Image 1 (cartoon, rainbow, N blue to C red):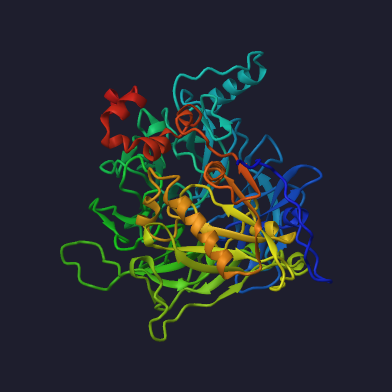
Image 2: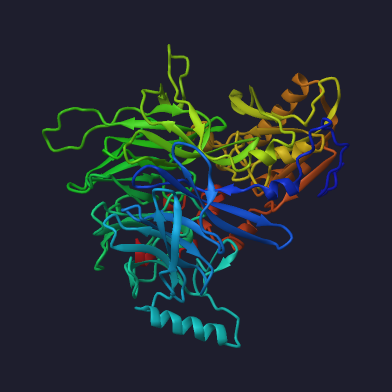
Length: 636
């Protein structure tokens, strides 16, 4: 017997008197804190704060400042939206983005470092194609930014003219003769992302990445895909020059002079993705993330080092079996700090250079990664003296705030990515809060901690699950269950915060929330991730059912006669799969879930995903690659 797919759940609220229930309105009232930007003198940290106006149906970013030593945080640009602050190297100014005039443009703020105040702001650009992702050059002379331009245009006037013509045209239909013609919910309209540079004092901009390519590539967030060399005379960026981009993950790193000229591909031998370049402060190296399996967007992200003098590439994390997240160089270029998911957390690791002789001119070797800071962390930054790490930290009970931790210390060994906290006297560095913008609101509502459990899942392997209990939990009562299924499928539940599928909000009106990191989830090694390839309904389904069985058997407060499965994206696919394979749930919520993997080829831009997940690796299957790549003969 099939169950209905429904969209709303109701239950009697359970929360303590004096502690009110966490609501959707509460969640939308929380301030969304962005990445930390440390001032050149190390005294201040800038960050964006996104405010949501439910009544006005809009989101507005603002820029705040706080002392890196801790203290009162405050908004410092009043009267206009402001986002993505980036310091000038002298610390007397910073650039930011604002829609105050002429769409998204770069603005400059004069900053008084003695008291932490902005004394003046002015607009730097007025480009018709608008500006995003600004970055101040280390020599202070230029500002690099991303703009969506027509690839056939050589200057701002050409783009302005075409944009004006398009806005006044009575014909709004668009004709596309290739993929990619959109990214997710945005049509490209024949434009490309290019990197432009403008003098920090103003004037016309110059396109450093001309051609019919996205440079940098499309990104949903995370670390920048471009960077300045320390002398300000070169940039490195990520671009995919394959003719059939929709079927390729072959992003490469390119370098070009800030004065323009022909760009050089420095990772062309790798047919998988290379991205997020970051120059070492001494200018000798470029660190970047790389995958090795072409066409596989969920391959392991390794941390590589490119020697700018010899062109030699060194894999710094070959034995480390987790994905590299955000990373930052130590100011002396003798260490790299990075984040990586590990069993529901995102730990901070340290890689230290070993002081050994290098008579053959080879670079210093780095030791094995060691865990430095626990918790769920991201968006790393470091003070100019190298003594303090700053980062965003979140949990299941609170959204991201900025924290700080000592950057020194040996940390814990991290064999194959696992933190071995069982080592005698294994030290982890404590973290302290720099900002607490949401503490006042959160202190008024009841929240629950994330509880972990392990069980034997598919293939006889250990699988992790999580439970979030309702407010004012009473172990003698029976509670209905919301069984959440994550998307991806290469994603994971953990001790983190979400403004979309939020376990605290799901639990707030009297439910026990159960979540399983089934085979295919991140944070448990690449072999565990790969286990879902070609097996979307096999091992993951077995894990989900076994995990829920375990929770029912060990948690007597669960009412197994009142359980609802909910999932989005791949979670929606699995919700559909569950609907056809079991009657144990009273309701099922399928949000944006695939139900026909064949038709997905015609409804997605990212064909590489379907080719890998459902048809085998295209680079290893010439017939499939020929089928979906009409320009193959021109590129291979």
